Length: 336
Image 1 (cartoon, rainbow, N blue to C red):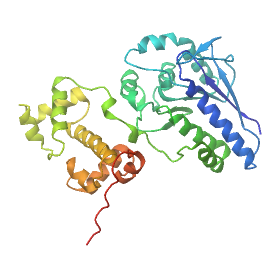
Image 2 (cartoon, rainbow, N blue to C red; image 1 turned 45 degrees about the horizontal axis):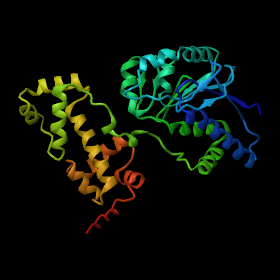
Image 3 (tube, helix red, strand yellow; image 1 turned 180 degrees about the vertical axis):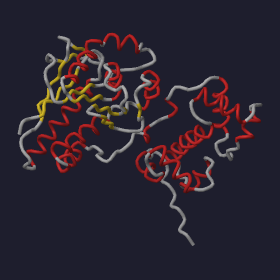
Image 4 (tube, one colour; image 1 turned 45 degrees about the vertical axis):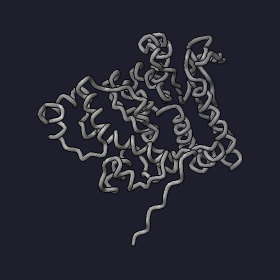
């Protein structure tokens, strides 16, 4: 079997774990495949760069090879924080952007990890395509690259040979999918077990912490959001909400939509789900009680909204994210 040539692009400030994580998992998959009689390792990995020396995020250096032909080029993410000037960072990475563009033009499949999607977009590879990235920066990404169809809820998106992944650990979701495609589901499943990885994740929605997202909107919409946050359990009444802010319903919807990019009801559902997630993680209240506490009289309707936002049923979310110091949930009463 001719091994697949997998190159990982190292560049100044990129995350070292995202440089080595996929390579390490592919190495493990090769051992699993050999043990199961599938064959020898089918991956030939290298760390490449258009630069002679690279210092990763955190200050560690890494040995690199010159850019070379490959079947797959993986582009890791880099550190973004309020102190980071994104424009300046991307400008400093012009050699990498050019290298990505050249490899894609040569027929190499290109994959980004987390915010590595910014580099793919700078290279022009995502224009008109669907893509994902870290949920924390998806809105910023969408505003910067309006010609990209952002699927922020997805863990891995492949569109016409270009693949993007969600935040950080989604590199393993991609790697397991890659192994599944090239070595079969049995090898992928066994590799996931060896590495203690969840090979059944489908969305990053359940991990979104809205409290960490930057506030979107100006004075009017932020005031409406605060009022809705303080009245989650109240029945949604658009005329009453408009009266609270001294405007017509039409003006309320227009101003809120222009500033926040959504409707008040859409925001209310998001805020209710955020509160419900906290209650599921930290209390022993039943799902029905939590539904009522956040404003849903019908537990079934609550479950539908919650699942649409998080990708998990409320009980499944509690099982996955319950805090260890929280009291055990009460059993639902048996129907009489």
